[in-house]
Length: 325
Image (cartoon, rainbow, N blue to C red):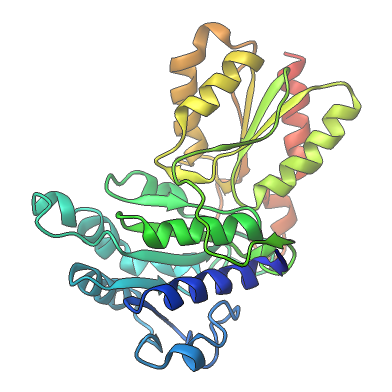
């Protein structure tokens, strides 16, 4: 075990994958000698050469189109989109090509080896073009997997699982935790299961669910609630697509209440899909309406970022309101 921050864990995962398989390639804007804008690919070009870790032109549609072609020919591309906000020019390639490659060929060919990394979310004073959380756009697309880690241990294990998974996978990294989240990470290759949520804390009064950077927010909110005698069950969804319905439903059967939180805006956010599904599965067990604590339905602001984000106080208030309903 080695103490790492999330960036170091991601870099270590890429290093581990590239060392084990010469078909693994890393590319994107400024990922070469520069090591990426956040330094997630530091030293990989020096170690594996320009043929396996290299810069691309500043054209996201081209990055993913190129990645699709490589994956279709048997390579294992790990493409970086510099900020998740920049992924939209590549939206057509991802949802119309990556997601449908296997289906349209009747499994004669696929791009299952494709992984797309992108830093997402707020908390770094990045303003409207460097702070968005676009996971819900891609959750609407069969054929993809969408994964979001919460800490360094999860980041390495989930990224290695994504690289080895036989489906195209989007890996959204919570950028505000890149250097803030530190923990012990195994040095060897290990993979955490995709599509499985993790119950971080068991409780009896209410289920609190999130992913990525919101898990730290949830932790602080739950500490406040438990000082008032509220027993909270905490779940990290980890994988948005496919999401672990059974784990969440079984928790709500027990607690009768659910709070879901994410940074993305309320309308059309993935919390709505979770709320609808759990309402269908657990209706007769619910003690209060399912609550959503999210970002606001506005473009992501610069000056009012703290007001926009769903912080621990907003999650705590949702927990209290649900329990007192």
